[in-house]
Image (cartoon, rainbow, N blue to C red; front, side, top):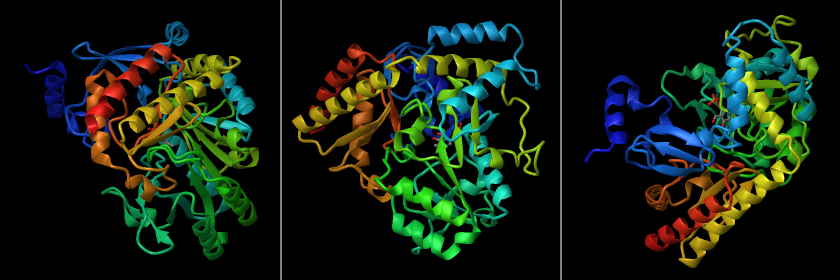
Length: 427
Ligand code: PLP
């Protein structure tokens, strides 16, 4: 019998390119039919056939409190009754801006936008406008949304100028983007010695979460800070994923580095479309209407999204919130690694706060190339077998996973029991 998921996917492909509104949802990397979600509650989602799953994707990061947290839903419902959008300033916008400036160590002023892509695109434009320079440095395997200038992959050669990684991006748009290896300090030093006074910005995920999970080597982020300061370049931490995911002060607090600009998204919108970019006051004041760098948005600071964000940020400030989240995540990855070891599967895992990486290889990867060495076939078999067991991991070997505070002992233990069976069968 054809499942409701399969029927919906077939029909969707008629009306939506590839049947999905964002490519990774199509299960291309793992194969098979994507799951259509009907509802979510806490750590669980239910598919179109009403099968429940323990969810380790959490809508790709925003749902740090789990699905449909009662306080978030109640706030959103109350605010929605007063109107969905005004396109004018509101008091709640001021409240969340003040909160972000208080909680995130480097942010003195902040502007709200509707997606992480908008945040990074605007931060890059602002850095270029502020410095009057064009070149930017990004790192292979870091994803910053689908802005043209950042859809770049490394070319060949020691100092690689970016080539568009998507059709439709003019080569001219990416020719000012230098793509370097994550954690390769010598590469960054070479780039600065060659183009130092032309570099507008270095943009980096302080913990890379878009090539599975790659943690920064000790010294990498401090050296980026130092080089940017020396050369008058703007250091941008893309914390769309790590912001309020790895700790209350975000990754910059965790590693003790102050970037010049920070982009935020995911958690700060509490599951609604909201993101932000902010940082040093002198840089932020270059934005219109004060300065010459244009940036705008019809739905920016949308009241319903701001309400969801405020409700979420209120709860993550509760004492012990991040300790509990990190302990849960650690419990998961240690259990998975132990189960794999028991069955002799080459596998390792690591976590930073509430995000984690699973690797079908010996040893934690430190770069894009090392991530690519993971055994993708084994991951795909693991993914589908876990899905059968009612455990939903990201449908790609190259994505980070997320735990929420709705994941309790019951969910972690169910996951580890399933993993024991699945690793056993993978042997
Ligand atoms: N930056 C990072 C680090 C991300 O992980 C993402 C999305 O996954 C983005 C930017 C883009 O955000 P959005 O999908 O909201 O446009």
